[in-house]
Image 1 (cartoon, rainbow, N blue to C red):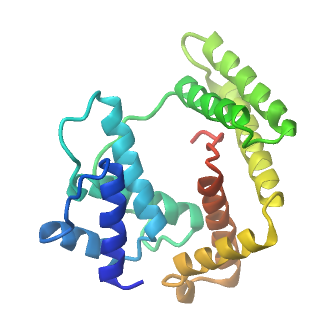
Image 2 (cartoon, rainbow, N blue to C red):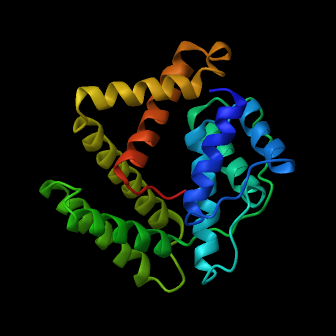
Length: 230
């Protein structure tokens, strides 16, 4: 999509996030969003950055005023940096995020994952076979909570490895459960996300980026949490 359409999509999404209150993406705001488009920030990545800002905003208590897109810029850049590092398309590994973020603790992370998985199971979004996944995360949460000072060294690494494996299992099952039309639709979206970077990537790097980007879209489509903790 061109820059104007990209900005319209962002404006529409911001309106929904602001409970229908329209905040125009014009002037300096248009320049910020235009730069996202010019820099190759995929639309879904930009929306993820907006979601991250709103999630933090909600945690502060009742909202007092609608959010302007300018406030989301640092979060969008953060998510874009994460996306590029994950997919391997970042040309500048020395970039740093605009704003330092407070890191969520391991027990807090597991608590959120467990809440999300339990909610998905309760609504029927997870098949019966995923009960074991919920139980697995619950057990890991108990392990993390049992140590007041936190896990250290080999114990922490072992737990993180188990979470990584659980996350991969979750994604493998989600991918296997996609129907052909949905998978093709998501693969086209992946191609669009990576189009600007593809000429500079090797075949191996492109294949890896496509796999990671597809997993991210599937996760967003199904509302799946990220079990792995980094």
